[in-house]
Image (cartoon, rainbow, N blue to C red):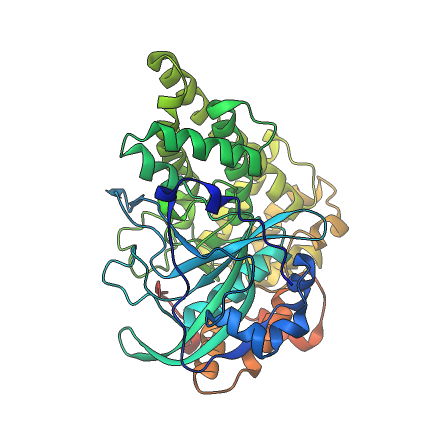
Length: 466
């Protein structure tokens, strides 16, 4: 029995399209996140059985669910699209966990919806496994994120640039409401819906916020913390469109995402980001741009318009200072110090040194904990000069050990796991999935997973999967 309470489904009908998932031919469980099932109060053994797999595949709708495709718009690479929406995902409903916390349960790859726009509504196994691995690592590393409950194969084929095995991801989130959800109603001049959505988000995520301006301030603060954590892990989202920014502050929509190996601030992986709009160094600025779009949506709800514009502008302009404080705190943790603004040159000098020598992002910071970071540099004298300044700050190794992951879901390891899974071998995925949810543990049996790619293993481009 799943304890559903579907508050989003109680909003006006224009917020979504109600429909059941489209059944698949031959569902089979590929992966199940038992700790997350327990967090949600779900019976993992039932989920792994025939009835549970039928639900996870979209072949059965459980009692109390209210499946729907959410409506939203979005700025995609700066260009506005007035109608997007869930084109291959369905929100089954909202689960109330044993402690009363509320979580969305969504099937990604559940078939066509009214928002599919000529798409098939399906997902293939590769992007499903990528999102599973990366989102669970992010959760283990302390980043606000959607989660992966299960991956199910469908027994069907999905056509992209070639033919792939189909799959469905069961995704868990505090909610799937996006900046683009607000844009959907704003572009239509539907202030009644904007007001209802604002009230819903405040009640669900920010009960202390007062009105639309309070909501804007809360989302800005949440995003400042999340983006700083991305930066501190060398994470590149790859497609920071407004429809991919959750107002909860969670990282959402892991498409062409990746983590850097050799560090450079202008690194891009996404095959569709040909101009580097969403490169690592630009992510904080894009967050500001996206939040400005949210502010624009909320202004009609904020009273006299000139005063509303001024107040919203002031709020958005607070992001850089909030982000900078979060950035200092996160990189301070990575260096084992209580970072102050005076430490910013120390941090930036290390990053410049890493960029000049393409030192491995993860291994440098993990190596600082164990006095082996020097080995990651070709110009070791330059590193020694920096390290002398850093040691003068008396870093705390214990603090660093829980801030610097020993291993990440590296792009080449994800690709190897996907290729093996497509060939019928799930062992590489299972091993990687186990390792990335224990990112700070010293486990010799996983040392090879911390190794950067060899030249013939480099995966320079990632793809969206749609």
